[in-house]
Image 1 (cartoon, rainbow, N blue to C red):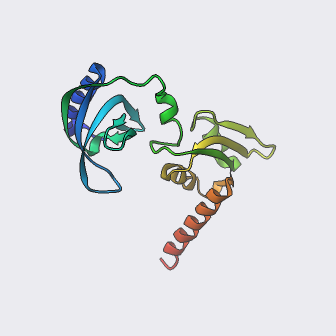
Image 2: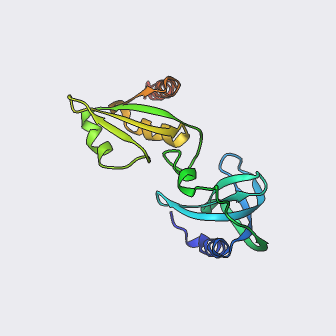
Image 3: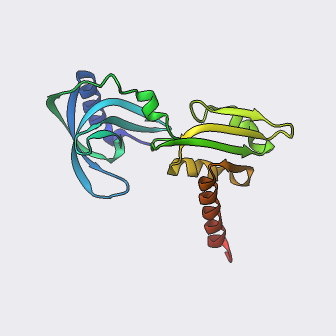
Length: 188
């Protein structure tokens, strides 16, 4: 992403995080498309896969949330001080999924065909992943991960070279999505 237009906001948020001061932001959530004003304690600036995020305690939602920098329309510093709770573990908070979205982790088991196995083995896709090589060259990938839109997109991106073995509900969801995709392309 080009963050040239967001430079001033990033500088204000970074300074507030260092000074442990809350910021007031005007934010448009992707799903809602409506602008809201929020008071946020900026715990961390997170650069992930080419995007920048603000991780912080949202006073409106009374919870730690992730805000995409490009969806912050305005930032205002405040005099309200904050402390990051000792119980907050940024690595654990941000490591539950295959991307930015968080959720309750489940045991994910995926079979990958031999032609894809090398791509999977050469990267750390998720903290705590394990990979077992099978005699035929395929692999069994396991991780405790949240089943988010990003996890679905990651899986669908491997096409027929991957198959979810567990949890079954996730496999069923991907099968339904694949059937909808086939239907969309039928008759093209």
